[in-house]
Length: 521
Image (tube, rainbow, N blue to C red; front, side, top):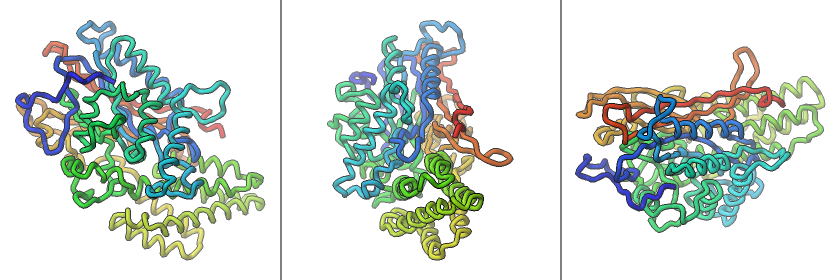
């Protein structure tokens, strides 16, 4: 991480007053060429209820692209020394690790929202240990275990750049699936040390002060809580995960509710509790889904015809978007197997029983009702009434309806676009032009124009980074296909170039890959 002990926010006289609560990424005292690379929703899990992240080959290719971009920042084959990148900022834009998607909660009989349980912290640490083993170490020879090596290849690539003289900053933004790091300090220390490769001595005090000023926490934390956003004037960038726009994945507090929108001054007064407390979508509903997967895998008789296929479908459940669509497929396929082979009838019955037990148990939890918003709570009440009759067609209809309601946005509305903080008056006056988020797992981009400011710029861009993972998508005719998807955003601020040259530019690199290996089972 960059030594930022000699840098601070821009001189107050050189810029307009900051909007309430906004804390800027510290600016350097001298012009430097910087590259900012952003990726989102990596979802490194312990793989006990499926592997949600991309493959090792995908990560190797991505980090090779990043190294190339550092060495070739412009459109010239042999860049001059003035084009040379001095500093790399790697922003991991939320949901870096996923501490909810694990069978360890169900095995312990503890739900992820039960933070007062004395076993809560140890379960989080146990999940983190497996995440480190799978994603932060070199792949063992001839290992058949799940593996992505994301953190291993990241540290390897950044070490190469550091040796070449490039200053490197890793900025992990908190999402809604890794927010348990905010409440379990030992797990956060493991994340910094084992995943990011940063000891307490590697983390500058200025970084701690920046995080503390943003979150309203103590600047003395050896391993700081994860920041909620990065606002950088040189990059013209505001990056945040995006859960603040999602009522199911943010928590109303005494001072804030989701309809109030972007209010960092209010959040700071409450130490960002709206995004660290358990929420309906990321903790309660996702915890129920993990419980269902684990329960079903435990009960299935492996000798029943079709059992291996059902287990594979269970492992893939989080690769669908929304994941309720995977429940529909699971119930449909187990029923089809039972109709085709009389010996498989018990298989469908087991799946259906586990589904109903998990659903009823989920609806019986006080946290399910307490964390749901008004309209969601009304839907839960209807769902609770409809679970009484045990009709297969009703179960399928309910799941299809829930999948339809939770379908991720395929675009962003004008109203939502204009409401993004980077496009607000105070933020635009600072020079911000680019709003970046993830969270929805759907890669998007949109441009909007406002009345030109004194600097003559009137182009404003929204980029959603989507997710970097395998996904299950329907074929045009029938059936499904696994596809690797990913998006990275590269933002260049070449401040050492003459004013006549193109000192600022950004581009997205999208990756979509298919292979027979992905669909081998």
